[in-house]
Length: 434
Image (tube, rainbow, N blue to C red; front, side):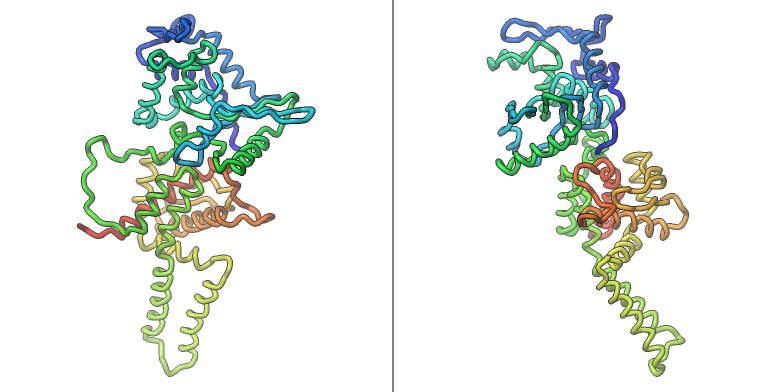
């Protein structure tokens, strides 16, 4: 289950309205549009009253369970959905459709635009992230909401359901939610939601998951802009195509698991080379030591032991050789000061998070990155990264800890910057000057 969401504040909803409808403002009665939105049937939307905003906030906060992407009450729930295809097949197939179950206590599933309450919540999410507020996608959505009344009249579309400004926002956001209602009190709405999504994917090949679109997530690393507009120049190095493809897959991935593994594959690309180089260096160091003699059996046996030990690691199903290889890659290609700078530039709280928190779903320990010993820091980072990776690819029943798809995405998202910035240094270290 995702972490419990703090209470939704009326002030946050109000700020969202002020941002969405620039030039309009707050009055004693609520939020008033400078120019009403005129619907085709002659009705007008003048704004949102204090009473409506208060009612929406009260409704959201009365949910017995609130997470980043869901609100669950006694007899109903609403979940934000993220389509898992690039062409919108899920949204097109299920848009504004309802499915009613059978039996004495039927459950109804409805997919479509978010409710007024959920629309207000999503709008308020804009206010939590300055990066999103300045993004091109954000400006496009806000402009669409401002113009939606005019667009309706121009194309002759039917009016929105009801006459609330939040109905207009629901259309402008282009978000999709799954609303579930039951005839009696239930505590398993998330299970019902996931069951419906499986049923839908099984029968239509159109897939979606519970979650928020990246545009509403403050920590979406894809949204970090390292260059100001117009300051991007031509590359001065060429990079290995395989590494570039893994990196692009990570940047484009919508699912944290795929994003993390894409960056991990960049480090993994060099495991065999660094591991073999390390073995060669150990053997070379042994046979070139002044105390070594090819005439003494015990000296030859010491070299055999080195090779036998390494071979044993390679055959170890626990993957001890991979963790060792990962540390060797980090030792060779990753600068801790640069990693610290990258992490701080992205989120000044991340390093403290890594130093203060384990990764419960992976059994990974805290990492001291600020220490003076870079090698010790790289060793600790390698252990944390490797354990997270193992939890993503190994999911045998009964093995603990393990990663649960989607349920642990918030925790995994915090591990992605560490993996991404590590992978970037590895790619750059292998660049060739043009």
